Length: 294
Image (cartoon, rainbow, N blue to C red; front, side):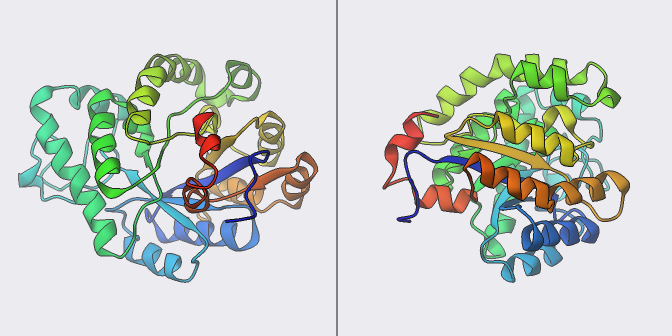
């Protein structure tokens, strides 16, 4: 790890929904092979999980985290084991807001913990040790879920968790008009939770990037947006996430952004270092002061 420096500004590029479909996996592979993608977040019960595992085996440099899924997806546990979370067909509540409210009931916390453990276990059974944690539709930010994830991270030696944070000025200037006022609502809600979560995570040595870009433009990231984001990266570690997918226009647009030569050139001109979470975790012991700034 001698190529790491205290003075560098790192940017981690992440693809969410890895393992969801074959088309997502194909986009992840291409964005890593031909572009700047360093990390992917894997859905434990995704329909293309096995293909994702094979994709990872062929790409040792790609960091892989867990994309904890408690809504809009399928459970790993049997429905009878988590009857308050999953329907008889094994699927969670599709609407993220309804799922958030459902998870607020204390009686469901044992079921949430059971399912979260099952998702981590499925990755580990496949030989995958996650480098980071994030959540489908950002349900990792739910206080009850965040507590459970912190415990799992401490037990399993995971060092990074996503706590969304975009500068309000960036939300104003770079949000997608298609999402209406939702980016501002997310910014406010996650802002209220952020300090509490970062403090809790920090007590167990779990870190999150200084800024996380992509939330306000979910589903509409393009080359122009990514070029503007790079100008706002301030480090020491920032993240930008996307949802590349070769099967639809929005996903292909995000793939183009992550494989853009102009984006590569902008990264070089700004002196940024693109890294995966595995690399950053490996540098922790040597560059401890880096983490103290986060």
